[in-house]
Length: 156
Image 1 (cartoon, rainbow, N blue to C red):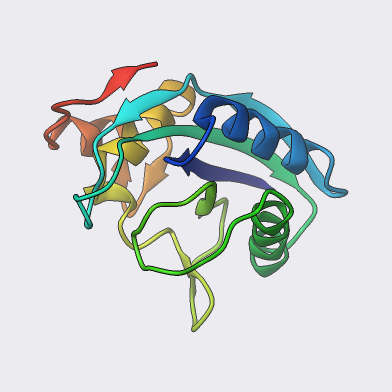
Image 2: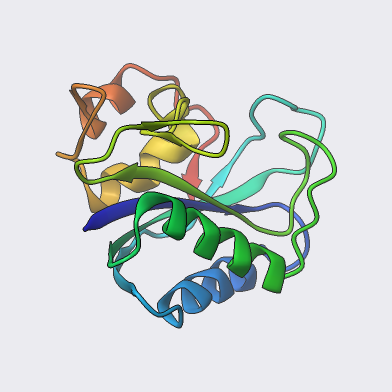
């Protein structure tokens, strides 16, 4: 199945961390990376008193079910040194499952499509680069993006 992931970092060598995350995903059995957006420098969202981020998006084909894909993303994060201390706080790496073709999930571990995807320009800018016509929540990615303030977001 086709799935879309968001990647981000705001600690250390952020560009290297995003590349290592994509490499970790590509090395995971059952995941094939199809496309990766450019990296985008983006202001923090939610908790704004922290360093700016580098964000990107990745399209994958996967044999894993949605929860298996989430587990694989969490494993890559852990392998790269992610420690979860503060919601929306600084992070060495973040990999979010944004959408999974044909799947609607809402449980304690996973909500698909991602509950905030259409509200976050830092997610939609890179996602629109690789999948502008992807429909999430009944709306094309590019149309959702065009409704949002993109101030401060720039290709890195």
